[in-house]
Image 1 (cartoon, rainbow, N blue to C red):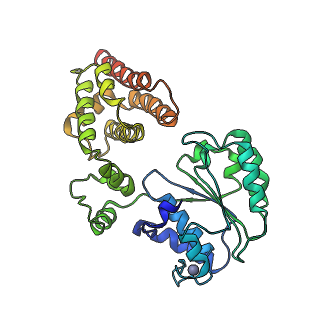
Image 2 (tube, helix red, strand yellow):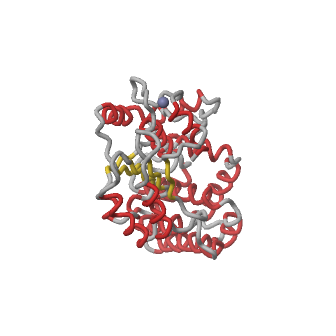
Image 3 (cartoon, rainbow, N blue to C red):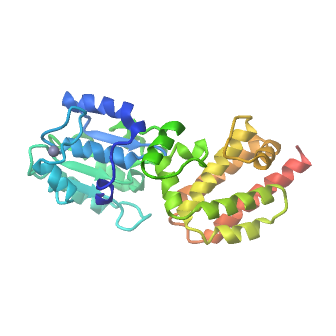
Length: 330
Ligand SMILES: [Zn+2]
């Protein structure tokens, strides 16, 4: 997690939640198992790393933050802190295995080099296989004295209930659009054209921009509009989509599906143009809810699915079937 370290860890929309955490730190009452949850792009890892930094610091500031200069802080910043153990998939998108959990638990039981205690970092916690999660339970239930275990996940529902129940859950909130706009402006990022929905996950917004995603998103929106108007066929729409970076496309799909559902329910959905919003109302919430279940499945398997092109096609074929059905039986 060294990559997190050189970026600002304090994000203004975290302030109220951090104030609670800082009170816990000051009172020495921070839970020993902490699950940091939240939608992708709200800054879960920054919040979690800010906490880890504070836990490993001997001279915290009045706000509960790490001082940045003590020996513990310097070792953490240099990614050489001896008391941090990480549990992450060996390969991106793969499960965390039982043998890894055993090594991790063993490391947490070694005597820490600093009096601040050991830190266990599990990221993403939803990649624990069922047997790996089960073998973690005992350590999570009775961690060694002074040890804190921090789990990160944006899919808390995918965690075993027995894992969830042993953690204190901190859900990092989405940003208020105005707060995000001001923060992004301070980062030399022009968010004046961004819609409120994207602004709620400012880090995802910036990452998409950094990846040069805007032209792609515009193309996908256009294709989606044509598909909903029955002016494009699902296979040719999928043809363009399946070659893009998966996470980027899935992120777009997930948000658009949500936007369409909101519009169908009669709610405001500012990131949709009038054409898409009208199409969503014609489809209706029942069909869009059914489609959103498919979209969630796709999002879950995006990193691992080998038949990606077929998956992308099936998403659009299913949607176009709902469009046809809505015309036959409005
Ligand atoms: Zn310090």
